[in-house]
Length: 178
Image (tube, one colour):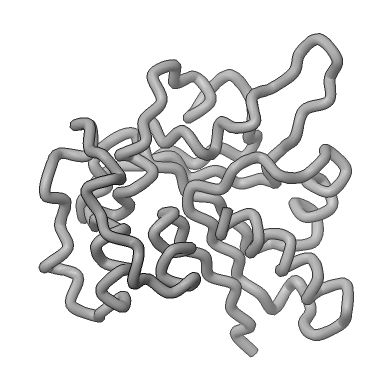
């Protein structure tokens, strides 16, 4: 959800003149499909530094699923960066200019919640609930990312809405670098 909000916010910032899209960096982690085809194309053309990063079998970028019958699908803007591994330092990735095609992460069948909760070898839920400290070494995954874990194991009752949003495992960067 957070990545979807950041994507829409980047368009809002550009459309209201707060910043030029050429001066923004949009980096989305685990972003679901949330725009129609025209918006995805507009964003792809106007935001030269826009990437959505996907961890292996992360389920979120695959939803909602394509509707090939009525063609009422939602889309991602380009460019997908797909890590089909644990996302450790030095791990390889694939750059996919044409997103939402039957290659790169779209070819994955067995989708995973744990992959949505672990990006760049960090347990994002524990890290965000601890206030996103700079020392990320303490937040390496307790389990392998492809093992099943239960969200009920985490305590959310004392979490702020911001922590909960981060705990939904999306980190978003929209940076005006001028």
